[in-house]
Image (cartoon, rainbow over all chains, first blue to last red; front, side, top):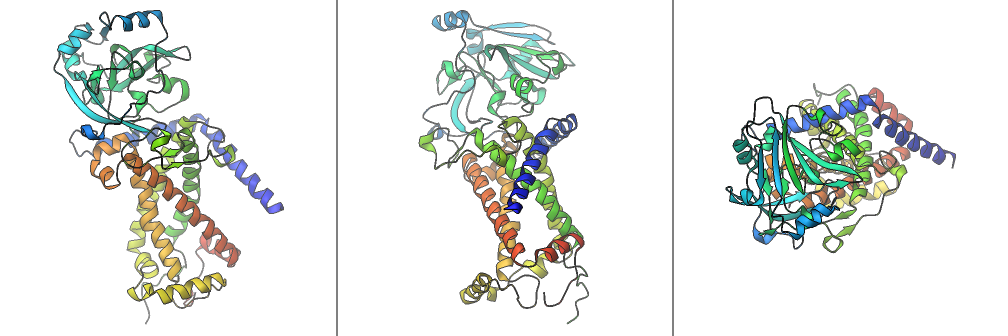
Length: 247
Length: 231
């Protein structure tokens, strides 16, 4: 019995020690290093080619596409926009660009479109497959003319979670990736509200929280520090999720 | 016949370092993995799955004393997991290279066809159940070779490959690996099953050490011990 108490105490001390180390600054920098090694090896494994998220067939599409996080935007403005079919919705492209843009839904639908059937992986562990359609972000960036010194794209959203604005970001590698699209259709239909109507980013080589919904703006910046709490996204700021969510 | 390559120590330095690094890294990976499992405690086969009706297993919720950190935090558990994944994967790689170079695999782990006779295996099992661990020449008996072999060449590599496939960034670089493992949700299920396979190995391993002169065994795994002919 004594030995069992000793083992239980050892186990509890180990868990408590780990929990404490986990909160330290040193461990934070070790995590950042491990994260950037993972990102480095994911890109290096591509051996110089652009790595592509697997694409599926129509037969693979899940019967329902689960919504998670925000599944609605609780503002009168959004309710009005939804009732009006998002006819007045504008996507602003701002920051380090030569020509700031304000694109209507018609402008977005008039651009060359990419359709891709991809798997959405939530950080929690579940996956769903859907067919997404929209212009490539690279086409929009080319229209706006990205200035030198822009290192990240910030995605601003209409939704709030627990009172804070949702936003996300990615590096220019992912921003210009061929599968990075501004989706307005899911399975050939306009985006349902739970999946981010009217516009949602698809950044297919990363987990679900990097695919912001209810998109209102794309801002090109040199550093993540000037936005939100500076860690590059809502979950990164609020709960310490990794900025690189390709793991 | 005298073997010029015969090691002086019962356990090579690389084996001992790897053993104790694994005690730490595999414990942390397993316990942070239980915390991650709590985020979505259901398992599926195939590429996708998100609801109870698609699941083949509803996993029980793991209590705080068994998880790292000791409270539910998916973000923090993932931090521990992605850091120690490096320690674990690089450790296995270095150990495997050393074990090929110093002959550990060939000398101690590889079995011969004759070892696989059911009567010989049954004999080994009976001796184990009688807690008789004396066996003939060679460091390990057949059951040990088969178990260590399955852990080192099947379970541990599968943990790494299924873990890689669950990372969308790695999967984009290695799409064939995801297909080979039956899709992301299958890989997640295999990851979970192998983790509990390793936990089962850990329990049996510790029990057998406790039953067979634990002080001597622990001492040997730290200092290396003597290499005796009949052990």
